Figure 1 (cartoon, one colour):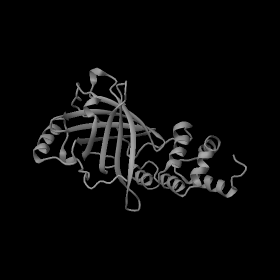
Figure 2 (tube, one colour):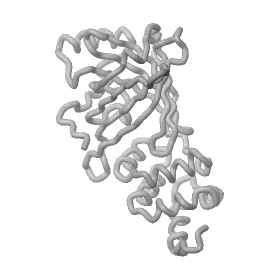
Figure 3 (tube, rainbow, N blue to C red):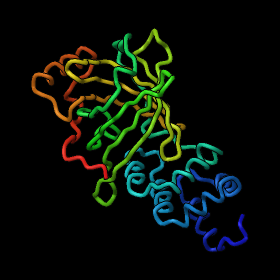
Figure 4 (cartoon, one colour):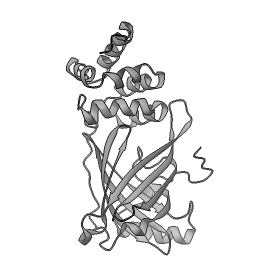
Length: 271
């Protein structure tokens, strides 16, 4: 503990942390011992301490936590969360309510898929998970990592904030096909908001000529689990003929287009 830390700031830190759902004195002791620098920097910053307070009130409600992050998240928060959750396990994220159990499609994924087939840019034109797949202006870029079988994935989208605006969010992950005999199963991992994301993707549909693909994913972040399905397109919008072909392929893979949202893909500004 720094001798120059104002006593009132330390008291504020402790009171705010203790007010967060599921945070005990033992958690606070761990944070104070292991992550005091990150904690004091976070709570000295308006957006970071507001984010912690906002997230603390959400408990295991995913739809509550996402707008908190979209509104207030910054580098100081990421550093604080990485230290207390990922690095030192001072806090264990509560499991989501209701609990999420991943239910992959019964149809088998493609067995001749390679990540090189995804190289370049894609737009999300349909999404299944209302928390994760329906953001406006979702664009994903895939690029090969030289001298490896890995690819990087950069996701950009506009997330709604608590003040009714939209904020650009960017996530970076790396992926690989671990089992060449099951090429349609891809693993991705990355660090976002100070937390490690591990995801398994199943490539259910890929039509190179029509320029679309359908991906089911199941992911974990600590004790949190989530799943969804994305429909990629090489273009921001598709023709009626292409949509008819896509709907047929989705139904063959066990999906119903009526269950999906249609995120906005036009007038996208990422500045």
